[in-house]
Length: 238
Image (cartoon, rainbow, N blue to C red; front, side, top):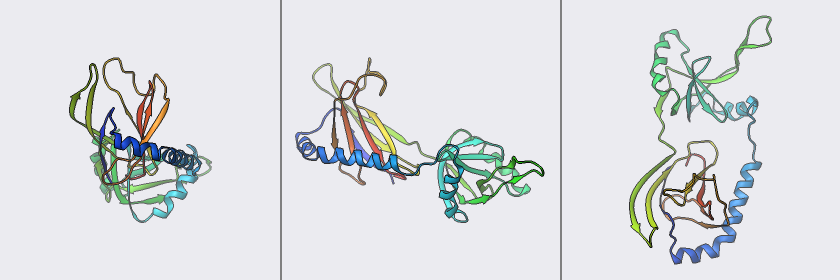
């Protein structure tokens, strides 16, 4: 799902402000609770393949679509997912040439669709170390790989001059979250010469929370202060 929202930086109507004041306490509490629930949920540690395996095993043998970054690895191509990932390689020698079709995707974010498979791995005789690690994979002969759209697209719509030196900038913003969990997006509330990079300087005094109208639903927090910004938590696959 794509969520299209028009964000007018630096301006909120009086009607919106009244609704904000009425809902501010409830929205802030909801925002804090949702963040707490995410932090308390199960998360796989970097070295915990067992957790990743439990999440992925129910999908084995079924068509599965994932988004991740392509990298070259021991067994072939590797698409990173949830700190682990899924391999893409040829299971038959006759399909080995197809591996070259992914050369152009190296280091890029892609969307991969195919039948998810599992391999238990193997060890060399008399050795404790695994020569082929336990892993999940797609067969290169069956998989479909396409370049994934960027997580954020910003289109400049126009500028309205205010009391000098201020100007109001209007943007059309498209945000995507192809991850399996929620993802934070932060947008600057001020642009221009002398403005520091986001979260590098200044502080936040308060927050205004509102829900823009349109398809889908998302709550936007406008963090006010010398280091102010807009923040929103986009659900998984949104």
